[in-house]
Image 1 (cartoon, helix red, strand yellow):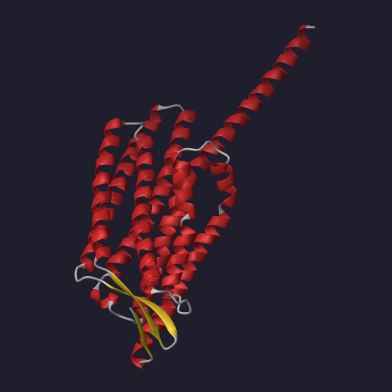
Image 2 (cartoon, helix red, strand yellow):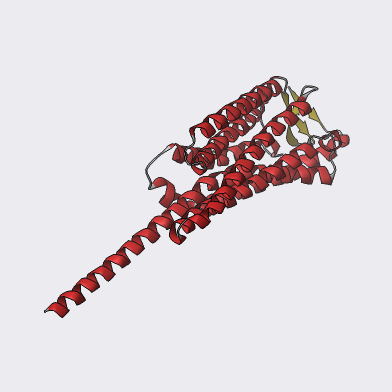
Length: 315
């Protein structure tokens, strides 16, 4: 149902919606900027390499960010008129995308942990069971929340706004989703740190070349994981703050800034740091291969020179 009103009492909500639309546009700019920034690496490390499950996950996570940002902007753009049906579709698309992308990022994390634990089958089974339990629970909770949501288009003083009415337990459902996701991320971080510390201790028993290679590999994995986890902590904390009634029902500048910062951090976590979980590992592998090839070529040159000197001396 479309509601039309010129009541001045709605002006604070109009200003809040316009202010939040700027944050949505800024989040979209971050996605496009990071894509342009890493396009060269993507072509070299993704498109020109043999395709695998990680390649497909990278491309989906990377390129779904642009339509995701467009849908988010359409929900808050005051100059864009949407029907109730389109407003509902964009709302569903954004929320379902959040669940699907979170599951994809979980698959990437499982693959990283599986590699760090040297292909341990027990660890893989453990991770898959926990991951499926968390993902299914989050999917069911989000479905319940979407089922109770009703969208309307408001035309207030000549501006357009998508209004969403939720059920009475919507805040509880959102809190449950983020708590479950936080449990999964904390578990993944603890497992990563534990195996990394274990391997760093074992480096002393290995030779300098092998120890250096393994140590650098684990360092790359841990650095990218810590950065991703830090962004997730920021998103989780802001999400729980925004869900508080004092913030969610307020149109103050502080509440608007918190919601805008949450939107940007959420986009950065999913569409910037998510693909870099794969890109950082492939970049390190490419450097390692290049260094190995260069060392092999140098050894070949040295060997040829030695053969030449040896042959000349015998003649």
